Image 1 (cartoon, helix red, strand yellow):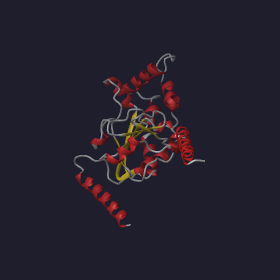
Image 2 (spheres, one colour):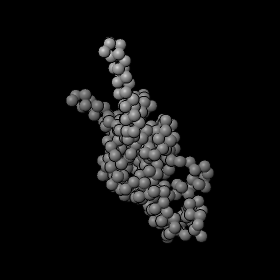
Image 3 (cartoon, helix red, strand yellow):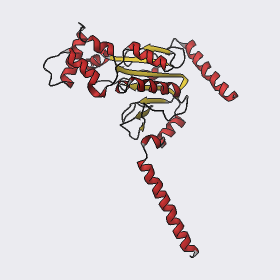
Image 4 (cartoon, one colour):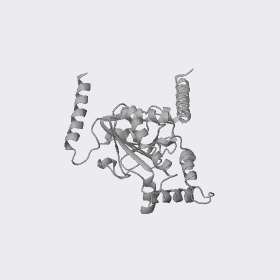
Length: 271
């Protein structure tokens, strides 16, 4: 065999190997493909690193979107019931809206433990989810908003149901949209603390003492729709440290967080 023939054959073999690698990559499960380049750039350059779980194809501006279904050029693949593809203490903030109710309680606890792991020592998690206390109270509540809530979801989701009966909306909340487990405030806080979070506080939708967590819940396009959705929305913030939600007046607590983060970083360097 001449040297030229040998080189041609070698080039063909190398090309075949590369083709096989590309083919294997195309059929490899998404969770084994690693982070895409845009996500690596985000983690390398973002001053504040913010992860939005269950974001769909369009995450909030400045947030890294993550979703199991709606993967796009702005959203990475993430099965939130499994280990997250991030190092410990990567993110400053994590947010998810109407996602945790779509997985079983045990999977929800596993997700929250992963959130705690990948948050920095000064990090915060914000969760919005349907409020079980509101749903259960629909049977007996005399509240005018409860009546509007029942009417809204009956008319929009239960078009074959005659009349506005609370039992139908309650069953919709439990079984509709792929829901698996609904939380009230006590149960969600209990689960957050099991996951390791030290401070938990409740907030009105789109309101927070921390500007980075303000205005995140969906705007439904009108005051009337927002009132109905907000009525049934449970929003909690959880901190990895013992400090509560950051506000303009909580300068001392903010300094405490900074000192805690610096201390942990110093201990790591010392090791």
